[in-house]
Length: 317
Ligand code: AN0
Ligand code: CP
Image (cartoon, rainbow, N blue to C red; front, side):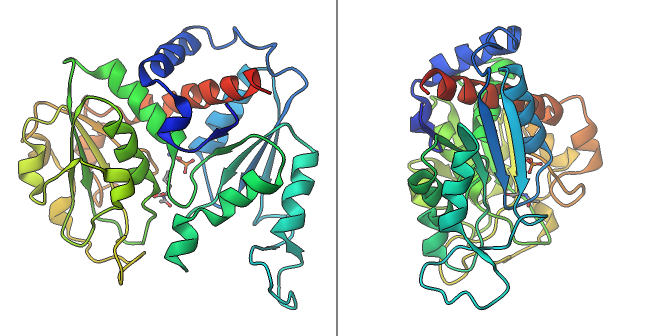
């Protein structure tokens, strides 16, 4: 594998999950694979899980790891071509990227949607410049539009916890005070559509996601109806995608918060969230602390999804 961004980059999902289980059962089996190879992780945005789990995965494979927080300690980067650089940004991404490529063998990039220009976000301007100019394999650690390491971990988790062959998986919007990217729900929809699960998305009017990711998934505007019979409830906030509201918060309606009453509508569902989560906005204390909540094993599987991706990249170096 040279790039990891879309569900199609991972190929057959049954095979990917099988490999994930194998890695999970023996995570040090491939510690020679990454010997003398360096992973560079570049963060334009904050992270707890992605940072720790991806570094751990790389160490399991015997790799060296360098982490760069672009906004803390590195030069501020200009990302637009043609700008007269007389402002507060001393370095251009077009030099910085090939320089970064000199010091590593594999690059992971986290660069969220900026909500300044929808076209730039959805054309993945930043991620694609790393692909084009670094000369290295590049994988997404949440880009402007997708978070595939999260979705892969989510898939592994559902496979581990499902009790029926074809579970009903409900992705529900939930309220949040600040505008969040669509990357997590976009990827989740893309990956769920690639399975044979019964997949439903529920959100208030105005929160429609890009068809590029939701495809033919069922959209149900009535959350209570959507939750009926659910085996997994996957909560997430996202900001509006459709123009003219791109990147805006249209509602903080707390009747969409996942509570014990909402979970009672389901088929004794498991509760999932990628984390970080704002309690009593997205989900009540009771639900996230309940025995049906699997947010911690879900986060633990981030190490596994990252390790499968890094393993495949190393195998093809
Ligand atoms: C980010 C988001 O919603 O995309 C990262 C989630 C993994 N969340 C926040 O910024 C709170
Ligand atoms: N779920 C996730 O990606 O968390 P972080 O933003 O903490 O990395």
